[in-house]
Image (tube, rainbow, N blue to C red; front, top):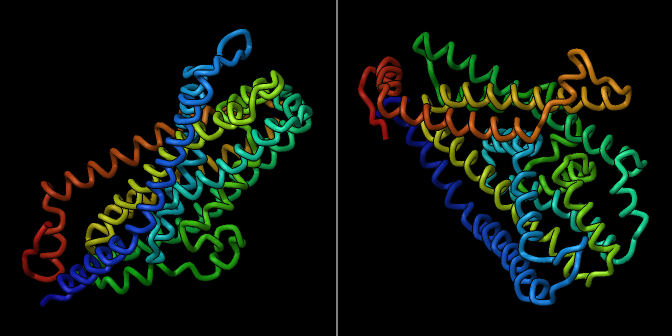
Length: 374
């Protein structure tokens, strides 16, 4: 059997084995997301709505629950979420790990912070509620600074790590163009991070499994600096000051977490599948990962850089010029664009793969014989 066919078969078998081993994690992820939805909507519909609690001159009803859930869904599309999940998925797959639940664990960590804050509100921490309502409070200012700094630094570091992989993939592409290709060589290039890996710090190096994204999510969540998160906390703070039962207040972060966890989990699962499809065959691995890893690196640097710049513009009240415009970018809108770019890139890659004859041309050049495009 030709060398490329052997390595292709070996890669496909390795990917299938990895995918088979993820079903338990996927089942646990699905059960948790389902449980959050059942607890949240069940409590709202069975306990809160029938009681007709008054809130801000109206009734605490389904509309408020839908608002909390929608805020969670919207928060899942914040650009820092998308960039962190996608880049970590790429990193773990390159290390032959099983990253199907990266988005789930990240979102769960983030949700923990929201839940704890609302729990404090529910049990009478009135000073916290006042701090949340005042945009100029020390609480808002320092947590926003901390969270943005952690988020921006993490994204830039993991972007650098994936940049090394991008350079390695390009080096293999150049060899393949000269008719020299070996999958083991590609694996060495993908895994060869050398001195840079030692300099990137414990935060990135510590992410060796999907559940390691839980503490990263907690750190991201400590800076509740987005409109969606602050919006939920202000609503909960208002509910706490009106003397509503604790369970009617806690239903809000549960619904928020249910929406955010669902869509962060879907994002992580999609990127796992998309990268896994590419990793199953050598030529796919070169072309698709060259494009998508390049996109991931660009996104990580763009969002991480924007967040670091926003710290500078906020601290020094810069609202005009290039820095002011960059610091004021809407990361929520950028998140939707990034998701769209990844989906479109994957769909185009699949179509070109199936109908463009990419594999036949390259693997025939390398082996002298035609190959299957399955």
